[in-house]
Length: 204
Image (cartoon, rainbow, N blue to C red; front, side, top):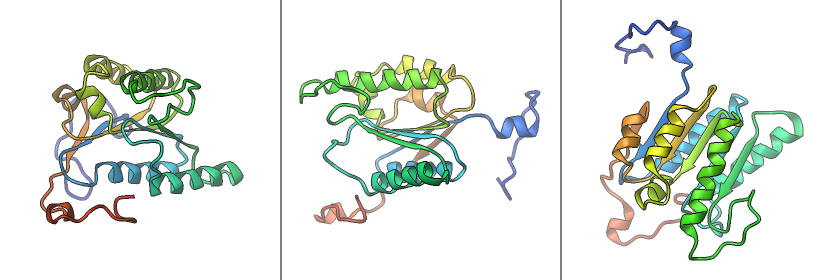
C-alpha cells in the first residue's frame, strides 16, 4: 500500500467513500507486548473524532488501575465539561461490571464474562457506540465462557457503523477469519526474559 492507496480495488459496486467507511472488526493478537496499548491508542484517535468509545476489560482485576484508564476517564470528563472529543466508558469485569449490581466472587468469572458479552450484544444492537475495545476477550472465548460462533455471528450482523477491536493472545481461528484487520504482536525480546518485572509507566 503506497501513499495510502490500496493495491487492489474490488469490483463490489461500492463507491470509494462507501468502501473506505465500512465498519471494521479488528484483532490484536500474538505473544508480544503492545496488543492492548495499541487498542487504547486507537481509542484515543476515536475520541478525537468525537466518537462514542466503550472499553470492556475481560481479564484484568478491577483492583488494577491502568494509566490509560485514568487518562481516558479524564478525557471523558473533558467531553462532559465542554464537548471536546467524544464520550468514553470504561468497564472492568474483575469486581462485577459497572452496570451490574450483582456481587461477584472468585468462582463466577465465567458468568461475569458472559454477562459482559451480553451487554456488548445489547449495545451493538442499539448502535450505542462507534468504537468498542474488547480487551483480552480472546481468553474467555478460548476457555469456552463465550461461544465463538455467537461472537462471529453477532459481529457479522451488527448494524450501523460500529468498529470493534478485540485483543488478547491465541485469537480463535474463526475470529481471525471474520476480522477485517488482524495484527500479530511477536515477541523478540522482553525484560522479563532476564528476570525484570513490569514497571510503572511501562506496564501500567
